[in-house]
Length: 320
Image 1 (tube, rainbow, N blue to C red):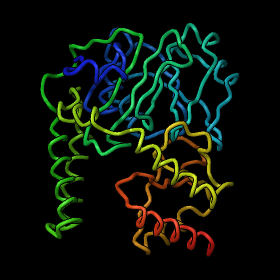
Image 2 (cartoon, one colour; image 1 turned 120 degrees about the vertical axis):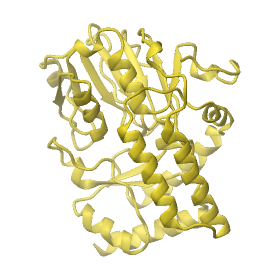
Image 3 (cartoon, rainbow, N blue to C red; image 1 turned 90 degrees about the vertical axis):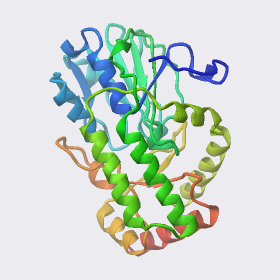
Image 4 (cartoon, rainbow, N blue to C red; image 1 turned 180 degrees about the vertical axis):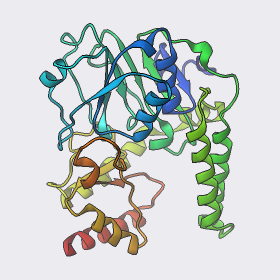
């Protein structure tokens, strides 16, 4: 489904843009369009397990290429492999690129899960890219697609995904708990988990909720990025050597790599600080699964809360 609403407000997302309810729906839309299921895919060996589960569910052939500990890959090594579609993840706001002329006969999928907006800056001849707003913003659902390829848009349902409303209820419970001392943290977590279970079971493709599109238009991305960049720089002063996403173009998380990551995370939990891991270990062999941890930069945390976070992280790290 093409976006509905003010063309001027959505102009930044360009005329070949589409919206679905989630990143996984956007990926399914590509895989189910035309003859894409018959192609051979090359995936990075550092990824969210949801990606592989979708390929398995769609009964699609795939193999892996290596991602190094600094998030780079060897283009020459990729060229030795047999594939039709190269899947690139632009990790943590970093733009990963391959030579467009070298891969002119291939399709490039760019997974921009950590980007708010993006373009075909590498001028790939056959290009499909998508993100996930719910992973990097306050939106409860939504994914932006940009592509120069044809898609079967009739695959998108004409109703909202069921997880969207549940996620909104969870967010409202959390707001009331934090600001008005209503409900409980357990109620928020239970409702959030219910929404996550719903999306994990979902196989159909839905449009982005119209309210979320309206909120997307109203988001002040520029001011948000100023705040996040400032916080990124604060953390970089403490962890200049441990940071692995120094070249970020878009700020959402500050990523550090440390050998004793699990003990570090455990000590932080004891201080009531729960940092996410991108991503839990899966079937591929990559040291990144065991060493990195993500520090959120979002403005939903006040400066006072963020300063507390930094001091606790610094104190725990120095004791390791």
